[in-house]
Image (tube, rainbow, N blue to C red; front, side, top):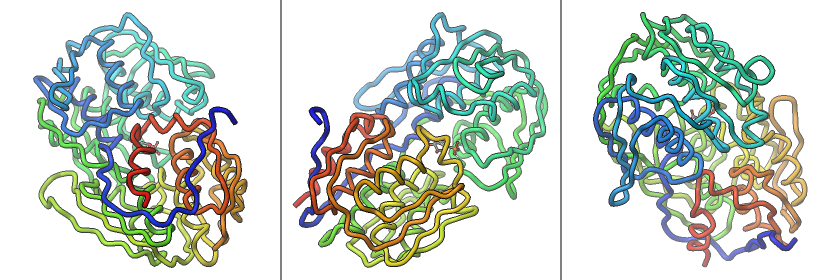
Length: 430
Ligand code: S3P
């Protein structure tokens, strides 16, 4: 109990405005594209969470100069050709995005490297990228035939592939796109369902070419990219915690400016609208490749819904906090086709079902998701984050509506994606 965080309970309401930190997916990609492009890239509103700092560290190991000046990250791109064989092992920490996307880059670079990460990374499936990257011609090995870290890779001059992705995963798609940009010939990838398209948008921003139509992506090879300015919008996956908090805590009204509103990421807004929440979205920058806007949310009476199919990739990271939201909706909420949750930072189905039950929720795990019956009064209890940032933040929001004390174990992991989370939450308490 000594290091457990005691969280505020049954607060009187949340009020105010929070500018959430930069988008994690876009911050990773801005560093990666900046590193392999020619010339300087300046990243505005970069997320200084631990995952994105791991990406910076890995590219420094490959000889890329990256520095912070006046709050902006400057990446002095080397082009594909001048990245250097790393002397040290590349340590990705807790970051699946770094692992998978970097493997795509390394596949076409003519040197050897080894990737390791933390205990969670060591359990995450990597064959989904190592298998297709081998088809491009890269030499890759790892525990269990390339399934788990440590993974070693020797890149080479690679050849374009045509490939149907077996899972709807933006990380897999992006890894293969990053390899395809370096390959000889045009690669064709087919996704089972649309996933976040930040990689595709960023290629165009860096002066490259990619063609997407009806889940098919064509990537001409041998592309040279050019450094540019990247403005990172606020992370809708971080905003999600406050959107749910605003909806479920009585007497609340919150404003979240400058949130990324890329339609491949806005499933949480759709869910809140379908559940009947008092939510309003004002788009700001028509014309920019990554849309942004201001979202306002007020305390709401909610009803249960079904969340399944092509919706899932648009809100995959928000499902733990959506489970909490559903505990406050009248009727049942059914989440289906979300088996990918089992291979995130932790098994997020087991984690959220166990921890929310600890607080009195009526929630059950299914093979590919969960079922939540509402509305329930949550009570106090001892919960743990499972060292997963999104589980930790969800439980901190749950504590706001519990009628007893909630103690959260292993809360430090919020630093992965939202280092100021607890300070920002405190600033909204009345
Ligand atoms: C991400 C894609 C998602 C998401 C992860 C970040 C990305 O993973 O869960 O947090 O930046 O491409 P999958 O695409 O593997 O589902």
